[in-house]
Length: 397
Image (cartoon, rainbow, N blue to C red; front, top):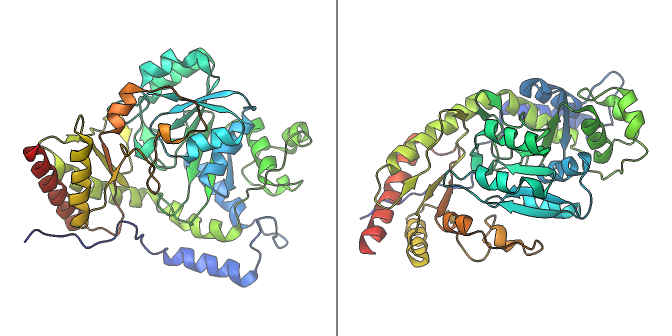
C-alpha cells in the first residue's frame, strides 16, 4: 500500500516559553496599549522596535498591526497619492496589490521569471510608468537586488520591499528590507515569527519614519519611541500627517522579542527541511526545481516547484493525488482564488492586460508550506510522495 503523510501543514510550533512568560507579565500588569507605560518603563513595543532596528541595521523601526498595514503606511509615507501608479510583481499575494488599491493608487504588474522573482527586463521596460516599486519577495525568492536597484535608481523609482517571506534572508550579505527605502515584514502565524498578526517597518529615512509613526496612531506621544527620529522631524510633519491607527500592542511585542532573538537558529532549521524536500524532488521527470542563486541567503519556510507547460487537468491531478496521500499542495494556475492563493487576474479592481510570460509560469507553480513541526524524515517522505505522483501523471500523459 502507498505510504501516506499524516502531519499537519498548518500546525506551528508552540510559542517559546520565554515569550509566554513575557506575555504573562504584560497580562499581569494590564498595560497592553503601547503608550500605557509605568514611570520609567519603555514598554515592550518600543523595545521591540529598538531591537529590530539594531538587528537589521536600520536607523528607524515601527511595529504595527499587520504586514499589510506596514505596506500601505509605507506607500503613504513615501508620498503615493490617489491616482498614482505603483509597480509590483505579477506573482505575489493579495495584500500587496491590496495595499496599493487601499491608498487609491493603481497597481502596474511586472512579469515573473522562471526563478519566481520579478522579471528585471520587464521592470526596466516599465520603469517610466511609475515612481514607486512595491517589490514583493514572494515566497522567499530574492531577485538580483544589485541590478534591480540600478534600474530603479536610474529611473528615480523609490523601492518598498515586501519582506513578509524573507525576514532573515539576504542578497550578497545585505538583509532583505535594507536595499530599498523601506522594508516591511509580517509577523502573522505562517511567517518567520508568530504573533498571530503584526508587522514591522524599517527605514533610514527620517521623514518616512516620522510620517509612518504619526500615521500609526502615536498622537503626540512620538517621544516614547526608541527607534524614531528626533522631535524636530515630527514638528515638520505632525500637522499634515493623518492618524490611521494601526499600532502594535505590548502583548504581541512581548511574544515577538524572544522569537526575533532566535531567528537565525530557526532559519537554519527551516533550510534543513527545505533542502530535504528539494533533494528528494531533484530529477523527477517533468518537474523543475527552482534553483537558488549563490548570492541568496534564503529562509525556506515554503518550497515551490514548476510543472511547466503541463495541461491544467494534469496539474490538478497531481494536486488531487498528493492531497489524497496527505500532502497539501497549492496551485497558482487555478482560475479562481482558493484560500490564500490568488493571482494578478483575480484582483479585478486593477485593469491589467494579459501577461503571457506570467500566465505560463503561474500555470506551473506548485507551492507547499514547510512548517518547523515537520521532521527531516517527514520532509523526505513528502518528497517521495510528490515524486511518485508527479512521475505517475507525467508518464500517463
